Structure formats: structure tokens, C-alpha cells
Image 1: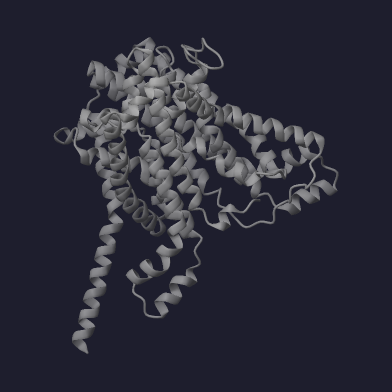
Image 2 (image 1 turned 90 degrees about the horizontal axis):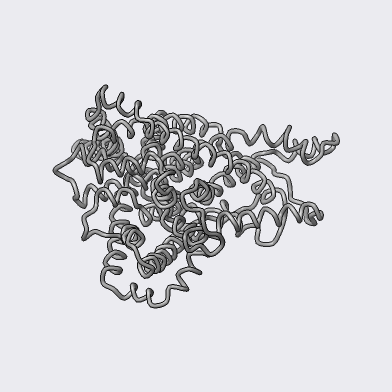
Length: 523
């Protein structure tokens, strides 16, 4: 009996050591892939490089434009997203649930798909309007395309947290629709709206693909300038200063978002029922909202299909070995990154439940742009440059926060009684994890994996920095054709963009298939 007890204690100790090592994995990963590369970048700069950059009028203007376009895009998405969210939340109409689901479709689209769709609409061969090149409107429209769904979802979640009793009480006291919105709904929505604006600012400030395609020569952003300094001029000092500027700005926005996230916890409230028969004015508002979503979020995707349909003989690009090699590289890089992202995401969520301050590190990869990550990795690990492991780590870094965020939210909502009962019945920690917690977290893991896979499929910046020519993916192949003169090359890029869009839509379908019924309830 004593020997059995010693063996049991040794087995329990071994389980604790194994769990401890797994829990430390995300911290070691962030240290190796984010913090050490950032420290290496800091060592590339000095006082002279800071002074030279700050005295350069062009770079000062570039910093100002990058900040302005992110702020303007955040304001536009707020002004457009709040009315759309109110209409979708407060009015009843056929297809309402599908509108809410499809709101995430632009968000999971690769940046190259969005950029090519906007060029198909307003580029040199635009279907709707020509002459928008070398103007800021293309980039602002692209930012709205990507981030309007983010703001609509944030406002929708805030509206769903407004108790029906407050709205009915205000209505009984004679408050109209506008007064109820200003004095009852808007104060409740503020944390969600502020958090949504922080996320939109982060995505727009550190965006790379859209700025590269749509910014032209005059309206590029800091990310594109960093890429050009490294790829074409090998000016590491100036690039390092610009990276630090970018990191400082995104870090402040990320900290604000992390602080606001604790005020946006979902609670069960009785929600106001939408009217079964909308008035004529409400029907007009619904029509305008749906037209706005169509124009901002769907039209570029339709333009990609339309423009690819006119490609003619350029469709033969699908029969070339280069295309299928790029398609295979896209799938295998995504699959390898997903394995690592799944491990990192789940262990980070488990560790964040034990140490509350680690929840803020969940958003650290969102604060660091792919260009900054790739640049730092090249400087920190020169012997590993152009290695497959470095590329997969960069993909996983950008993908695993989606898994962590969903898993952590679902894990927080699990009643503690489930694990307590299992432990009372004699289950070990490993058994509780495998047979109780993981089955309950499976829908959240699946949703996070789908979003993470969509991110990896459309990853562009890290691939440009870290891949070899033989590792060409669909995104880099599209960019190759687009940057080569000739109508046939442009049409080939459109055909491949359609292929990439369909692949992203397949992942989006996986995301929706993984939703459980509770999350599909309409408020």
C-alpha cells in the first residue's frame, strides 16, 4: 500500500510538472518571437538615427498621415456602424440572423482580396469609377470595408446588454426613439464602442497589404515605408526607428483596449423585443442600412468575381504548376501554423485563468504588426533567416490570439461545479481536462481555429519578409502578377484572387458551422 501511495504521488507530481511546462510555453514563445526581436531592433537605433528621422519632413508627414488615416477610419466606422447596428438589433426582418452572421465575412477576407476588389471597382480599369488612383479615398474605403463589421458587432453587443426594463420605463415616461438612444442605450454602449474604435485604430495603423496596394506612392503608411527601407535600401537604422514609432502607438491603443475589455463582459439580460411590424420610417432605415452594408462590405467581393469572369484566357493560370504549388504552400503553411497556434492558444488561456495580469498579453500580438515581427525576427535570428520554422512561428504568432480570446471567454463561463464534481468522483487533473473541460470548449476552439486559419491563409507581410522563392503562396503570387506590367498579368491576379476568396469563404463556412445554438440566438 505504501509503495502504491508513493507511485501515486510520483504520478501526480509528474502531471503537475508536465502541466507547468505546458503553461509556460506561451510565455517562452512570446519572449522568443516578440520581446527578444524587439530588443534587437532597439539596439539597431541610436540618437543620431532618431534625430535624422525626426528631421526628415517626408517621414514626419508619413507618420502624420498614418495616424490620421487610422483616426479617420475609426471615426467613419463609428458613424456608419452604430446606426447599422441599431437597425439590425432593434428591428425585425427576414434574414436578420444571416445578416448578423455574414457581418464577419469581410473580416476573414485576406487583405489582398479586399485590395483587388477595390481596384476592380475604382482602379485604372475600374467597373464603377476611374481616376481614384493616388488619392486617399481608396485606402479609407478599404479600411471601412475591413473594419465596419468590427464596429457593427461591437455596437450590437453593447445594444444587447441594454435591459428591456430601462427602455420600457423611458418609453412609458414619454421618451422617443432618439431620447431613449441618447440617455439609455448610448451610455451602456460606450465601453463596447470605445473598445471597437481601439481595435479599428490598431488594424488601420498597422495595416500593410491595403496600404501597399491602395496607397500609391503618396499615401503609403509607416508599415509600407518600413518594408521599402529594408527590402530595397537595407537601411536598418531608419527602419528600426519607424518600427519603434509604430510599436509605441499600437501599444498605447492595445493597452486602452485591454483595459476596456474588462468592462465589456457579456451578462444575461432581458432584451427588448423588436417590433413585429416596422413603420414606414423604420423600413426606410432598414433599407438604407442594408444598402450601406452592401456597398461597404459586399461590393468589393462581387467586383472580384465579376472582374475574374472577364479574364478570358487568363483562367489558364489555374492549370499551371506554379499556381498549384502556391496553393499547396498556402495550405501546408496554414496547417502547420494551426497546430502550433492551437497549443499556444489553449495553454495561454489556461495560464491567463490562473494569472489575471496575463490576460493583457492576449492582445500583444495584435499590437505588433507583421512587418515589425518579421523585421525583428530577421535581426534577432540571422542564422534562421528564410527557414520554415521561422515562417511558421510568425504565422502562429498572428493567429493564436483568436483561439486564446474565444477559449478564455468560454472557459470563464463554465460553472465550477462541473470540475468539482469530476474531482470528487476521483478524476485527476488530466482526466478533468480531457473528459470535462475540452469537450465543453470544443465549439470555442473550433471558432478560434477558423478565424486563425483565415488569418494564415491571407497572410502577406510576413510571407514577403521570411519566405523563399520556392515557398511562394497565393498571396505572394497574386502580388507578383499585380506588380508585373500587362493586361494578362492583371487578369491572372484577379483569377487567383477569386481562388483565394473562395478559400477564405470556405473557412468562414467552417466558422459558422462551429457556432453553437446559444451564440446563434438573436437578441
